[in-house]
Length: 313
Image (tube, rainbow, N blue to C red):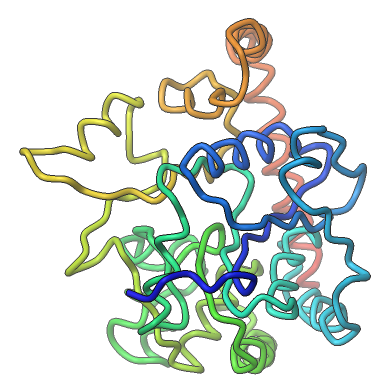
């Protein structure tokens, strides 16, 4: 594998005040892993980040720093990705940045290794990720997953990936393929779910991207999804199962809001002291036990579902 390219590689995050605590913990875990790559934080929208730690460790990278064609591209994506908050689409501005190679990461992630090592795989691939999305048969990306295999061929769902963490080259054909994917969404509205992850996968199928999934053969890295582990003990034991070492890039708390109440969520407290951790556990624990968290989550799901239904009319 090739070494990193000084000044030509970096990490992009997207955050605001609401996601600040998770973003701070993410950056803390990145730095504690030994990673010294520069970090840019793109505004999600809403109240901006105020954390002193984030402002010290990362560069706040305003939307105006990207070329107009990049902002126009986000507007194009918005025409079909009606189920995806606009701020999430800002991750794709990385394709218009000046780094030749970059990592994008969601905030609900904790780094478990030095991510600089991941860039070495870009000597042979243009897009690198580590997840087990390929095992889901497309149910999180498509309303009609079987139609994807009918159109793109058997096994096409096995190349699925999550949009929350990936390493990529800044290739113009990525953008061109995603524009073609927008057109595909418009022609096949009943097949995909209207979010960025599904569109990225369709673009990869259209453009036949050169992709490496480190969780598949021959690498067999561990799944980074928190839902695959009961607690942090299970993570530690999986890493050294049967006397062998199984790498894991990160822990991703996707599909639910990590508050610390689940045993596997202990890692989101890595950057805080005992008192702050305890206060958070008491506060979120009371909401969980009272049923308040469930009601808020249920209300959110209903609202998003209604919004999606109305957008189709």
